Image 1 (cartoon, helix red, strand yellow):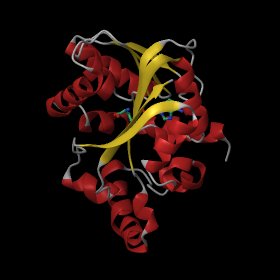
Image 2 (image 1 turned 90 degrees about the vertical axis):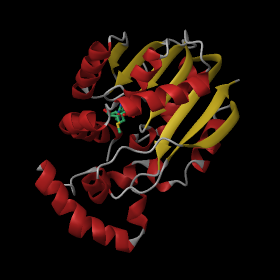
Image 3 (image 1 turned 60 degrees about the horizontal axis):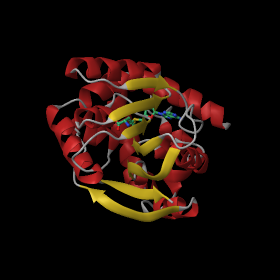
Length: 247
Ligand SMILES: C[S@@+](CC[C@H](N)C(=O)[O-])C[C@H]1O[C@@H](n2cnc3c(N)ncnc32)[C@H](O)[C@@H]1O
């Protein structure tokens, strides 16, 4: 499958998911937790030029803007960005929202103090291309922060796969009126990060691209999931972040 076909799929998938995704991730508690964590990572002062790639409905972008940073975002899916814009308006926050591809950024070299992305890297067909682009737009001394989880890991166990086919897929069909077998599951072989051991693979990638001080850590923020969502998506793991500095 061509990289452009993966992106066409992604656009359609996130277009259909925008409403339910937004509902699941706009709580005050989630906003406050990310704001707190970002303050710990970036310092309390604000004022940094930050790019949030794959911003979706703006969870990270809005937490950054609320902490006083100058935030630009990029996302492939117009419907997700519409939700993010409405969320920014509701919170009275200013963010520069753009539509575009995380693997081909419309920004000049050495533009940002920080490039961040959450739950994006696993969806990309060419992660190396993305990291190289994120590095390009960072200023020297700028920081890259990747937040992600080991999504779709359950497929490695036959028992969990059976559970997914027998229980989760029918549940998704009933509650979301969509066929989950036409989902990211069938793209697994085109999404390299889903087959790598993470976050170790992320650390190796960042070091290979010349980042220094590369470190991985667990993120203590629980993933907002209702009981039904847990049954449907079966993700029991946590999330991690990997950070590095452009030398
Ligand atoms: C799981 S959501 C994460 C959204 C947000 N970062 C968050 O943490 O809530 C993945 C997002 O990545 C976007 N996306 C997928 N492929 C992309 C690409 N090639 N370039 C930019 N955005 C992409 C999707 O449109 C979607 O909004």
